[in-house]
Length: 566
Image 1 (cartoon, rainbow, N blue to C red):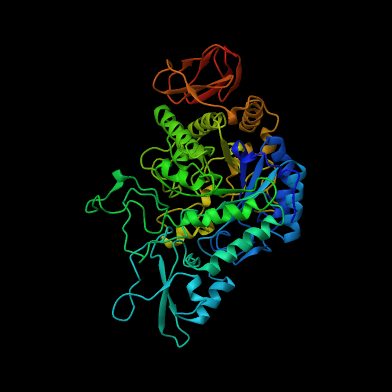
Image 2: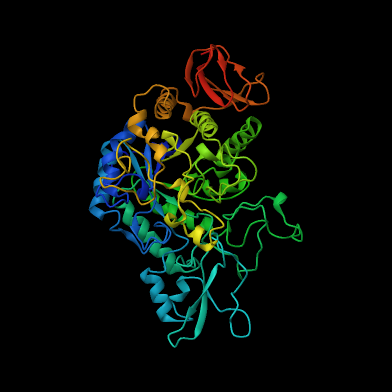
């Protein structure tokens, strides 16, 4: 069992700033145009300089890469695309030596169809022990020609694919809430549960500090797998509010889909909690659980379950003072009621980057991606201005914050991707109707010079980078007063110095309806979501997302001040 000097029982996760690395797009050390573990290791000193506490690595496991690694073919090995287990050991040792903890992704709802477990299930046939590890069912109709129910995939199209028996005749169907290459496990199987305990221990024995759990509200499906038609306004990953009910759906219809947020998932995480607790220090579980309302999401972080849950309600809140104040209050109350810290997040690898999203108008497009055919593309300057202000507000809040690689550079969504370059299965399963997530996954720029802006030692990157990103490269912002990178560095330093992550929120009145102002310890935060300037209160200015005119804060800007009473 490998321990580290960082796993010291401090409950570090309550106040941490955790930086998400999408390995494909962070840094490429071998010149093949695809990011890798060695590239991450080489760039870790720059993350130390940024001031983060931990990194979360999106999947780097053996995979056919049909869904960018979220289709896992071996949970206990590194895909050659990213390197080797030795490369992971170097990465983790380098991170720990720098005082940075390492969280890895785990994908328990489904595997790749290439996984040996699924291939064995196909070969074994109906009624076998091997098939019981996945969700196989007979079809409906006279000859089983219809899928077992009407469920649709998150990526579009049916959530079922029919198998072919060895004699060439149609066979059973298998469930895949995502791509057809990602068959869902059946978590009623004790065998599946033991395999994942072994996976957790494999990485814990190597010293990882925790796991981000993909689709943590999935895994358990309602008995009988009943038909379900989600509300038109509901998110594809769950969390549909009552107001989103379609005509014809009665009040008796469950708002929770029969494949999301079933009570049985909590038994799994109580079990996993015990697995982690057997290791020294504070190893953590962080939930990707798209659950509404926040009081329901808080179930995932009760004391004997997970330690954190991503606050998607906050991510989805528009740049509006009243709505921000409401979701902040609701978050602090919901998570506080179960003794957990609130988390705050604005961007990740699945949503439109907030430097673009916060300037969108009209329909909420964050789940669909944006591209050149999108009506009402966001204003780039406005998006960056709001992103800087929103980030400054987020980093002043008590709890733990997540950053997505490149947001510290102010990167917008990459809009002008050519259709032939797209790789997200959403694009293909919807026949081009939805752009998917490629726009937020474009490799990040490190240096203004070179074809790949320092991302790769070779010439190109796996997704094309916008030419205008040269001006946003890290070497163009490092040490430059007023740059987005320096704003993040300053915010993270002040956050530590003033213990904001372990503080409280005391709202301040008198600033008008478009301003969210509060006191956290000895710091006053003023976020102006409107267009009219507002007068700042007394106190030395510690940080401002935009230039001030005297004591005046312009619109779409946030300032931190040392409270006059401190």
